[in-house]
Image 1 (cartoon, rainbow, N blue to C red):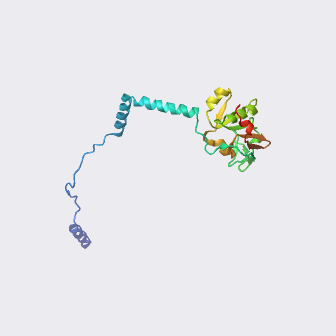
Image 2 (image 1 turned 45 degrees about the horizontal axis):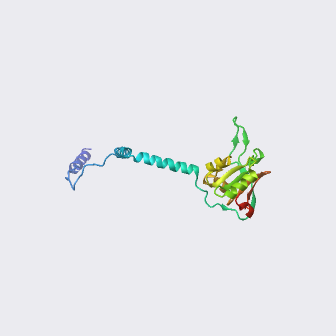
Image 3 (image 1 turned 45 degrees about the vertical axis):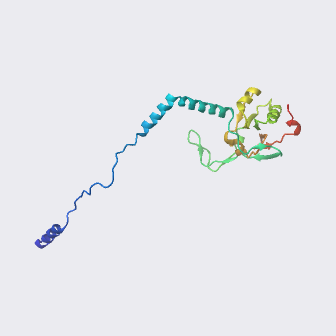
Length: 212
């Protein structure tokens, strides 16, 4: 036992203790002088306010917003119809999960195919138009003016047309509806026929293109 303790003591005596060393300064050290980001932002805003640039930028933003409301971005890829084309659009969907009522009772099981037209009718025809084409506006007004049809623009100024025609005009923002129905040219009309929607692209006749 004594021999074991002596060996351990010898090992400890022979070991070299680890020590931290100061190697001095290498290279030039500079203090951090970068200004605080929030301070920079505040100074910039204060400068803009004093110079009147803030008011100018706000006015530019206001004018751009008004311009976009008055004339939204046209739907890309839509042209005037030159060939009549019609097809049926089936709105049937397949439920991807169980749909339950407020009491937890399953009313539509996952995988069930549902046609919305079985319970909700399309009350008004949807008429898609180029609002910058006067002939299309005249055609739609003469054909659907006494109905509840919804006039939906893919190009043009809906507010100006509402004021001039004294009826509501909508705008297909981003082309969501024309993409959904597969419409490529206008005028185009969507109407319900039984359990499907009939989509028609309607080229105007030469006499319908004459100034009204």
